[in-house]
Image (tube, rainbow over all chains, first blue to last red; front, top):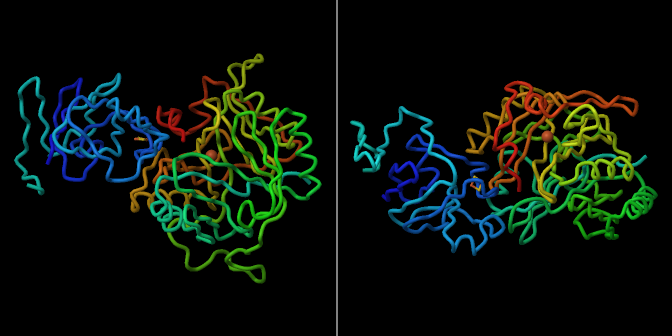
Length: 124
Length: 303
Ligand code: FES
Ligand SMILES: [Fe+2]
């Protein structure tokens, strides 16, 4: 399990092994600007500030994520799987709380406030 | 007789197995021919060899094929395309599996369009003698046929002129900046009796917005939407109704991120049907008559 910290909102969510960055965030009730969610359009690009990701869940086309962009820290979030804890930064937007009822943990690191639900997460 | 219809769409996909599952199991097309890096699919109510080709490597549109009635049409359209200033080349039987000789044209929008008048005949899945209304063993959505493509173009005006002057398409509906001679932002053009066989909206050259399958009715559209959820297909918009063309629709993405559509309804057009006009301030209503809002995703996701 890796922690994904999202800037500029400074929210941290957990990700399950093999899960993409986008999936982990939406499983925790968060959304941001996305398109095809299948690696084809590039709309979901974010900047990788710390840590690294792999594209193991599916093939990613160089056409969508050119190697130089990837090397410069662009992360195609709908296909990127965290290698470990990481920090990403959204491009000109804020995280949206789409499902306020979700039970997954998220943590606002600025407020040092941890919202944790009673319900045990099944993967723990 | 001219251009008869959209015959095939050839797209790139990142993973052939994923594409096979999507176009084969979810949409219910039949794989009629397979090569190392591509699969050719046919829908059940189509007669010619194939209508969708998926090729591994990248995303987006490789080319669109439109079938013309005669080989004289090929000569005519080739000549007119050259006069229009387009690059053309001849293609020969077998360049595309199951497709005869033809003319390849690079459109003013940089898309590649192929015209051909012969294709290997495979027949529909219900035959021609006392045919059943649909085959018994359809899989997934069970799409009967492909219907149209929507692409983006930097200069819709020139592309509309190309389709009308070179290929005799007629604009069924247009979107303009304003009614007093404002610039063209999109055009839905017909060579059949349906309101669009090709459509384009302003945007980058060479990109695919979507290609569409025709379904029988609204009920089929709704069921397709449910199947997309069962198969974890990301739905972009719908089920809803278009203002432009009046068709019912679900937009969704294939596993490489190319947008597809299932479409039903719409109205009939004839050579003397007048063109309808939408003003850009009503574009949201034009595209989604119910909802009246363009999502950012709808306007920005292209492959
Ligand atoms: S949402 Fe289209 S590439 Fe990620
Ligand atoms: Fe369409």
